[in-house]
Amino acid sequence: MPTYRDEVVVLRTHKLGEADRIVTMLSRRHGKLRAVAKGVRRTSSRFGARLEPFMVADVQLYQGRSLDIIQQAESLGSYGAEIAVHYDRYTAAHAMVETADRLNEAEATPQQYLLLVGGLRSLARGDHASRAVLDSYLLRAMALSGWAPGLGDCARCGAVGPHEWFVAQLGGTVCSACAPVGSARLRPETGDLLRALMAGEWDDVDAASPGATGAASGLIAAYAQWHLERGIRSLSHIEAVS
Image (cartoon, rainbow, N blue to C red; front, top):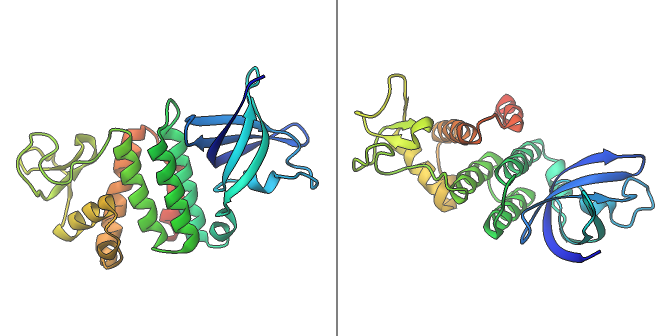
């Protein structure tokens, strides 16, 4: 059977039989993959630890009838250990890989892979607040999937912005004429933070006030979950400790 190699991020795993696992991965060149890792639950496994969630690896696989088989795995980024010992990083990472899993059910791009790797690396290092890393990831991942939120002109009628209302269902910021009753008001500082998170302007992100940070997080969560058409379960754990 033909074999191939790729770089992957492990999104999740499931037990299979007594010693195997099904590993769901986001790859750099082949999109989302599901493959069997045989014997990885045994203590004698040579690469079981390299196929845990949040790990980045170079894997060799061969094509099976229903699921491919992982033959080799070499670590490229051991982020799981540093993420797992900090609850805020752990919950943010779970929300990121859950989103990546949902967004790439049909097809993925190298940019989605690189974005997720960069986000997990930042979480592991503690470069920025975990929720800010997650928020930036969500905005960029949605943009790469064709759902970039409008953060300048009105997302509905195109009126020149900036505007003071944000409506996830309409695609982002909207003018007063387009905003439905009960729309969320977007304060200027929150709007600036959303744009900084989208652009990766981390000096501005790190300097934002707690009020703007909390407001931006709520809007981003609502926007992402609206377009994914179902909730991101991991976000509930983040909100519970915020």
